[in-house]
Every structure is written in structure tokens, then in C-alpha cells.
Image (cartoon, rainbow, N blue to C red; front, side, top):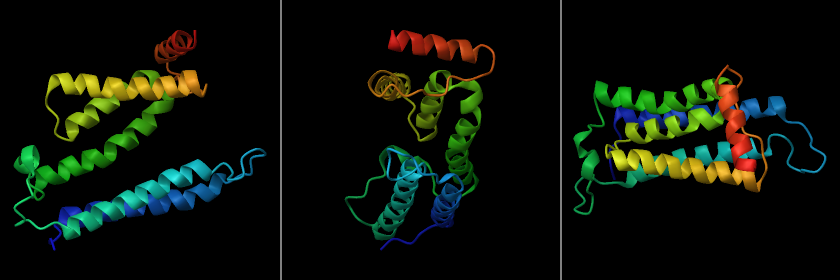
Amino acid sequence: MGKLTSGQWTEIAIWLTLAGLAFGYSFEFDREIEFYKFGASGWPRVIIAMIFLGAIGQFVQDLLKTRTDPVYDPGYFSQFSEQGAGFMVRMGLTLALPMAYALLLQGMGYYFLTPFFLGFYLYLTGERRIKMLILVPLSIYGVITVIFTRVLYVGLPIGYWPGFYDFGNWAVILLRG
């Protein structure tokens, strides 16, 4: 069994705390919806459960992983130590980026902000190939956007800051037209 670093313990503590706080907060907006038996907090609680299970799964995987296993090959990421200031900065950015995205989403809108968020997050995880930094985020963005805007006809945040509002409206008209 592997021995966990302080960074791994910190990461699991942060994710579990985040999931616990989010679950507690979900009771603040838990309202009954006439045609949906799970209420307003149903889907957010599913996402929270996925965060919780993902954190536990990563924790168990880290515990079971042995560093002397000949199959273990960290590949490209072996250059990144799981200790030290650089690791803590990357881990902090990895946790802070989604929060910054959530804070900016209402003002800037999904249609403008999401491709940049996905690209930066991919870069943060270690991807450095320009082709992948462009194609992967645009593919994810395109699939999610088409599913929500054309198939489900769900309104995604268009933003309310000048310029971003116009861009968001243009994107919705283009996609639904």
C-alpha cells in the first residue's frame, strides 16, 4: 500500500469538506417541484454525491497504489513532484479555477467563458500540445452546448455584462436558429 503525502491528505480533506458544505447548503433551496419528485435540490445532490464518490475513489486508489510496482508509470507527470510549493500552487489553482469560473459565469456567460475555462483547466492538468489545448475544450464545449441549447432547450447563462450579453444572445440565436 502506498503512503500518502501531505498534499494528498490536503486534497481529500478539501474535496470532502466541499462536498459536505455543498450538501448542507442544498437544504437552503430544497423546494418541491410539481412535476419532479426529487425537488429543486435533486440534481445538485447527484453532482455532490459524484464529487464525494470521486474523492473517495481517488483516496482509495492513492492508498492502494505502490510506488515500486513495475506497472506504475507516471509518464509525463513524473516531472511534477507531489510535494513542495509547486505542487501546492498547482493544487490550489486546480481547486480555485472552478470557483472563479462559477463567480464569473453569471456576468460573462457560459457561451464566452466556458471554452477558456476548459482550455486553461486542461493546461493546468499538464497538457501542453497546442492542438489538444484547442480541440479537446472546443469538442467538450460544442457537445455540451448543443445538448443543452438545441436538444434540451435549456437556457444557459448568457451573461449580463456589456458585450458578453450581446455575445451570449448571438450564440443562442445562432444555435437555435
